[in-house]
Image (tube, rainbow, N blue to C red):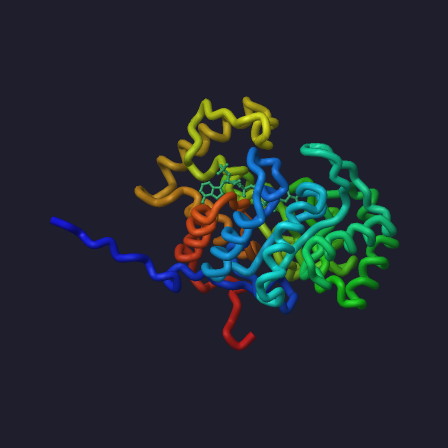
Length: 322
Ligand SMILES: NC(=O)c1ccc[n+]([C@@H]2O[C@H](COP(=O)([O-])OP(=O)(O)OC[C@H]3O[C@@H](n4cnc5c(N)ncnc54)[C@H](OP(=O)(O)O)[C@@H]3O)[C@@H](O)[C@H]2O)c1
């Protein structure tokens, strides 16, 4: 018997949207993380590949991109800028970051002085080929530089000038309640934090603080660097150009064993584990969106499909009237 394969209509896979904290920004629950475009994941990207990945993301209804100054020397931003130049800029929520100078792969230095950060902002705008950033995030810096009021005053002027729509904080440690609890005071509207089925630390202090302040939460590393996709088994190794080659092998082994157990006991039979893992993050009431790193269009499709596992019943769900 020949069985017709009915193509899945795109609209059935459209992502859902949430309000990013108290901002007016409507973000897709699934975004695209673009550290990968900087070349530290064992692969470099041509402009055409990035255009295909982001074009597919748009078809899926994804509108949120996360990048940074140091994913390559503004390289990831340049590739995104190349794409944005041939698309409608206003259709996208572009989140980038500040605080590092990239020297070569896996080598950066922290630079959080106000003068330098303003130069970094100009370089990001140029690379992204835009005149504003939707979310400008403090990139995992130490408390000593975070506590410099002159930095936030300088950035507030850029908000007033229209170059930044909103400020955010990407906390380096999942325990960093110091920076999280200061978010509203320094004018930040969103926190970025590592959150996934293997890393639940933010649930104890960071998420309650975000909920109390009505901050948006971007869950980064939602697939635990790909380990939670279920495609890697204990004993897996990674090439020298892939950031995972630098991870502690014993810790990776422990994670992969835990993933095997989760796959056997928690993931419904036949379900793609990456899809399940992203939906798992998005079910927490504090989490606005996940930003999985994507290397190709197939991963964009698989990640976007996580939205179909979600109900509309979330405190930040975007209401049609908004
Ligand atoms: N300090 C910070 O602010 C900071 C730090 C880290 C990350 N980030 C941001 O967060 C984003 C996400 O984190 P991440 O990229 O480190 O980790 P991640 O999203 O947990 O993992 C990304 C990797 O998972 C694999 N993958 C993605 N989708 C998949 C799918 N559907 N099926 C199977 N495998 C899939 C891909 O690698 P393979 O196919 O090679 O396995 C991809 O490179 C970054 O891109 C970046 O934008 C920010």
